[in-house]
Figure 1: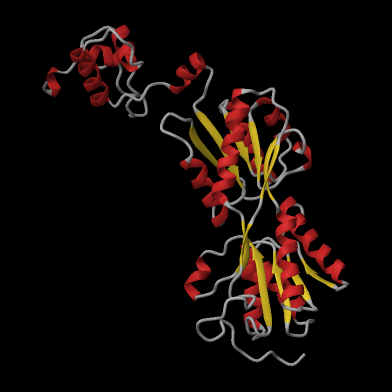
Figure 2: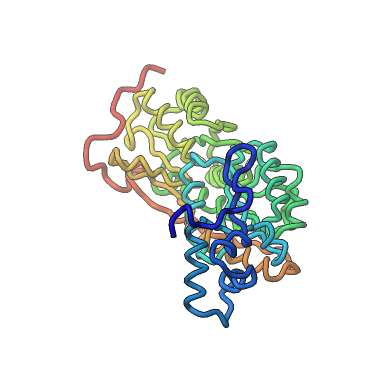
Length: 364
């Protein structure tokens, strides 16, 4: 059919000059059939001939028809969306978690809507309000404490992942990592296996529950060993961590150990170690929680505890699907163990080349 012969669509342009989305009635007019026939084809109902189905399908494709999700949602009482709120899309762990969750959505599953709170309660609040207005079918939240989070949990099937806040503790399903246990394992390794008498911690924001748990694990092991704690915390960026670590490390006598609470703190500590001219693992041994990822290009194999992202995503989706199916279930908490990997930064794996950081520590 030539363009000049095609049936004209009713009012094809908005005042802005943009084309209006095709409607079911436009498909029917284009295909020369009734709206009911179009509906039967789109809903894959029986009693439609193959020729008629092909005819309607061709019109759907030619007009770029995508349907009306809002109208469909009114009929099904489902939005077709799941909301995910993460603290920082630039952080490799959160990006991997987002990907792992999305991979567990089949073509027939809801579509994932992503919000990045940037660790700001106000930003998290805006996303929660938007997702509640959209009536998403479920929520997965790595929270920073937005005031309306308890309301969202009461209205929408929700799973809290990775960290929690007091307002939803015991009120929502949780998938948490065994952060304190992992911290204890890493710090005990430095104290008991490597004989470190001084072990410092470079920690992030203690308002985040998993950071608090990691620092608690550190302090517990040193107390058991009768050793002094050396703490710098409250950092939110690698630069902040580097400044705090530099000031702290200058007070320590090599060899000493360092435990960092996440990958940003790790890079801050590494910058301070380099600035002081210390050598790894001769002068300093380093352990961390969170996968370092890009450090592999240096040949460095960090001794680290890694949250198994795939397992966390699978358990989160399982709990969410169960909660959607039965909102009356009592709140549940699933705890996932971290994977411990021993590498070059503690000396358990020999460096294949010269030490990563080489220099002479300045006079103290």
